[in-house]
Length: 396
Image (cartoon, rainbow, N blue to C red; front, side, top):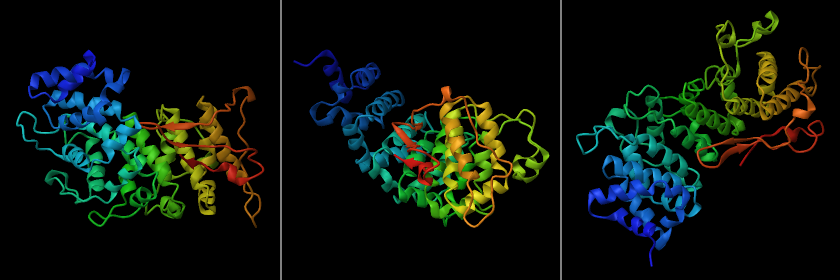
């Protein structure tokens, strides 16, 4: 005999609007505490919830919230991510500014839909949206590729000019997960024909944005794209991605440096205002330092960071931010910069190893969190002085 909760789940597909609304409203908390009630009859309740995404505003809001919570289950995640018609519905509603019901001229649940789409990127096969083509909404001024539309939407969401009810910040988590795959990394570093812009440069400008969600997602995307080692020359080139200012400014505070150090720093880091603050989230700073670490993979990257005096910035970050995992990656970064290069004289002039009180050193493996699960982790292996491979940062 069905329980009362199971009977309530059956009302999700009821023909009466008020009954549907009461059902999903009361079921939202159970999507966290008792998600199994939605897994019956070969996920029929999940299939019904997918239809409610197009229902009236409040019904759709509750249905999307339930799907977000259920998407942490692998079976549900696959059911959602592999349903191309459903993905098409999400894309249409996220990017539109004109819905069929006049009382809501724009999608009122766009942020929740963005969060759901970001969660679905945990399913690797969702990478097909990188090449998916669909008509572009007229007001978006984008092209016919879904990924370009989402990126342009993310940019417009920063100031609320496209949809007053949405900032689309959670799309940055989608980008971060797509960038874990080769197809995603190659997209973000390839100049697009429709606007002649490298997609990654549309994201780098948000490393100091007020939204911690946007900053975290952008930081994760940049880091994951940096695993594309062949693209490092473009990362560093001032006429291309020019990534260093966007990595260094968020980790820089209002410290005063010696004139000799300041003179060689990037112009963007000279004469900063006295109230300059570094990112308040140490995990975001850690992600940026891990990206710098990846850029030391090439000789060009190491030489560039010595040339523009990245060391003093890392030194002050290590000194002032009390976060063990961040300090650990700062120490490893400096060790790499101080190592002698083959055929060269010593390169560690003006640098010294960063040290902490041993009692405060964490033995845990630092990780960066994403929308659902983790984006990437840094895995120290053995003695760093014995093998340069120990300084690698790896994806998960």
